[in-house]
Image 1 (cartoon, chains in turn orange, blue):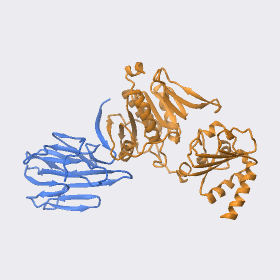
Image 2 (cartoon, one colour; image 1 turned 120 degrees about the horizontal axis):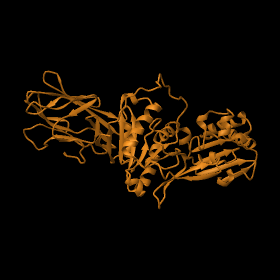
Image 3 (cartoon, chains in turn cyan, orange; image 1 turned 30 degrees about the vertical axis):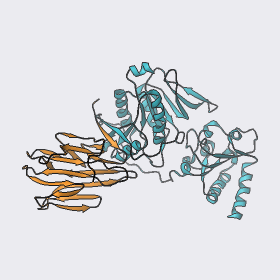
Image 4 (tube, rainbow over the protein chains, first blue to last red; image 1 turned 180 degrees about the vertical axis):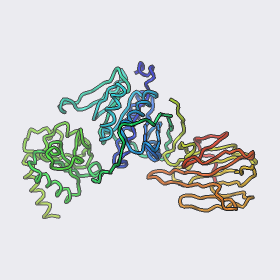
Length: 335
Length: 150
């Protein structure tokens, strides 16, 4: 730790991913985790915000615990363009030298951060589910599912800086909003203008509902074990009757049974419902990393040895389609 | 890399020199004769800006003194008018002197000030810059505690 700090690498940075805010709260969660890491390293958390008219976000990040907010605010940054962002942020990193740099494992973070890491010639651990500081070396331990999700790998970046990681939304808890908080504001004089190879012609917001899955108190998840698209769609009827939301595993998405925005797990969303019913899912780590925050998990699977039962609070051994049909029938009569 | 530094409040800020600031003070707050201008810190729970000042025109003639968003001395007969989200002050002839407008965010407030203000020597101390102001001369651009209380 000391060696790298002596070389000028110091501080924890969080990339301010404010698109789809307030639904997407991963930046606030990373600020909270960053505070913990920074306290152990004796440094501070800085949130980096790029865009146009980003004042409200700078204030939000301050309220949620940022020690400093670094802002590059310019009309030409109103629309995200990966080349522009990589060029600007790499200049900032090389100049200010943060030792840790975190971003949400959102669609945005997954595109932007690997390119940035390549530009900076450093490592990146994607889709982390835990971050700790090694007490002896001061290195960031980046835990991420590896080898097809069969195990969790602890990854270190001992020789290059910054230590970069993306983290799933919902893995860490955000701090409460403190209106009394203040933070340092830093306005770097960075070179914004350059000839870009890609020009944005227009952008169109995704019309699908945002935040439903992440905020839902009841989530019903279907896996390939449901057997067909028609069977999977029983979950929507159940969700309507019970007031919940529907999630899906990767094989279901690949089969085209529902839209990708419902994907849960390592490459999808993370949820924290009070109750989660998971039907016809085997329990692969790629999926279960997205449901670790559920208070109560009810699993339905015909295989009594399915890994999903290891994390379930209540397990039902049986054909998922049959169980869901019976449940639906009961509910229709009762409601 | 060069950079500028300020302070940001989670609750309310002013836009000055294209930077957020919880409050700023130009000149000497206790001066009875000289120019001064205070955009004071707005504490959590309150949502109105807190503007005070002793203002002159470009000839160096005293125009008005104000405190807590109200005119307290007014030898030139300026007029203060409420606006949606703020207020503006006009010279007796109608031309605008100062405009104060607060934007409401989901969890906070940003006040933009517009105007051209001078000191007794006719030197520019405040002038418009994009959607805020640029300030000149002696001052504190990021106050850390509230200056005036009712």
